[in-house]
Image (cartoon, rainbow, N blue to C red; front, side, top):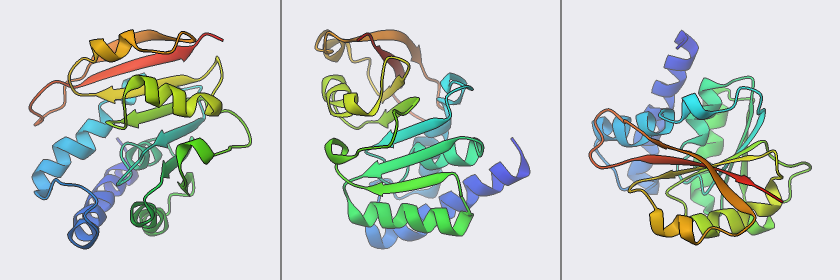
Length: 193
């Protein structure tokens, strides 16, 4: 990790703590808990971010996780965060301005209404919805080359059964997040048609 990345993550955490008092961006109030449950959890997927995938969407980004940490860690990639909650996208826009994240685009929209110029290479969600809803609502945002990364707590065996027929699980990973109690899983999905 470079000094710029380290400083960026600390700057983001400081803004999250400050804005959370007024805007209720996350139920987590304790700064130490924010480090493990938000920052480290977001960073736990770094090994599965395809180095050749340049355009990423974080759908249902909320307080900007994992999209903002990804933008900090991958300044060469174009990261878009999308959320329908105006106060959350205003916070993300403030983070973008204060941290100088020129590779971050913040979109205030419902996912069904978002129409990018071209398909994303990767679409990530963190505790956003069921796998069926995640893939169904974002199908129009990717193609057969896109990686869908779903960050989950408990292994969602029941949700996998309900995956749309044109999606398949490419791989699954148990994530070890320092300081986090409970299970964390990453499911990587692809569209087959």
